[in-house]
Length: 289
Image (tube, rainbow, N blue to C red):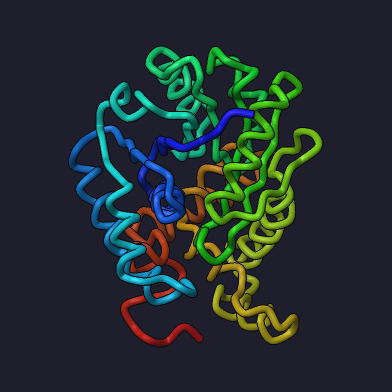
């Protein structure tokens, strides 16, 4: 079975940055790639912010450990440089099929023959993307949940063409970077987590978009009635509103209508979620009730 020591993460948004930092924190050599140096400036700021978060929230985290993580993590806007030594590439670009297909086509031209490709797609099937990769036997999905240091599952899903060696290597790597691997026996859009989560969030959006109840009241009844620590709109804010929007716009007419509501009322107003300070909630204040 192949050993994965060097990882490249493509995309340095909220989740891509977390995957890169968690992998580096666990001792892997990691290169975080994005399309230009301006974006990478923000990516480095995210990494510094994650170092502080780990010190505050991760049991056993020390300054020496987060310093080692930052030392293991480098950044590049040159794709060929980013993947030159990669044993595994994890793609975390926007949830749009054409973007992912184009990314893997470009990646295949510059990545070493040994490299395994993984998509972190939330809803797309790996078999929809794999042909563009040029290496269907070394292509699969590896899906992380937001706040990877806390909600540390890694759902791993191959296609009928994925080799057992590649699948097993990624399952082993998931454990090595502190994840709990959830191997899937066959392809399922949404994996396990999003097969449950997406309909739940969609139902909440329908209540708010239809003006049946305010988002905060939807959250309130969910928390009180179920004992859950957070409600669906708090989850939206944690995930960030762009990803749910992309998922909605790839759905049926009803889902696209919800996507337009989300865009017009929140995204277009700069309310993108917790990372920007505003989403359904205002994170510049202390009131999240």
